[in-house]
Image (cartoon, rainbow, N blue to C red):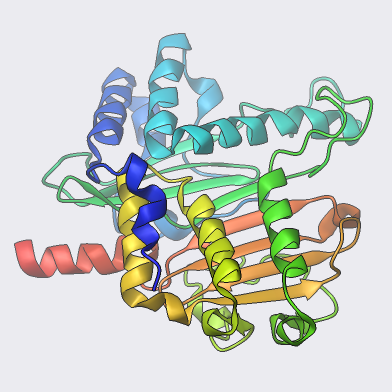
Length: 335
């Protein structure tokens, strides 16, 4: 039995929402009433679970409406919502909108691919004694959080995507820039480590799906067959460790204290219940997909669209997306 928490032991700290709480309170305090009405929703609003990762019309407060000082406050919310590496990746994803603007030959005055076109939402009242949440969302980025009893109750669904996955020549970014390169390479490396018998278990379809299977559904579990794929017990010790490294890498996008708790939860639910699934080809340039799942966690990676140069990734908790499990427990015990 591996101890999942060991991979995060060096960065373990208390799961606290203090930084996000203070950042949200400061931004709210700075806003005039008309902008407050755009950012604030009740905690039980259907909008809280109305998430998506394509460039669709959105509710929430448009970052571009903020003045310079308010933008700094919004940036503090983003900083509090992710680990340092997660924040760097999120900012790089935003900057890819400039590449898409050029690739799609959009008019100079078009804001469809504006790198600042991201929206902030607050659900409920940010307070240590309240159940509340917040969201940061735009194209290829959806960060959803719930909070209870002064802690982050949930940091999922957590979606990162990139288009193009690999930047071609002649763009505002250097040729070959690959924002989600590590996620791609870990999948290929793990597949390459499998013997033929293991590959037969892991590979469930010759063709990759068009997108992540959980899509933007409010609930992920009905879309997933929990028995599919190569089980943890069927892997060698080296493969097991590599799989746990993959899980840890995705989870580490979240704030450190919450990430440690989520890794502990995966272990408590049983790492022997982890499965690895692959669909599609075993090389770059054509559609490929992988999934890691157990009763505690769902991680999906898909690269199929735009001639297999368009990556979508997501992390979800089956029982605790949106903080459902933790918040229900908090209400039972404290209220």
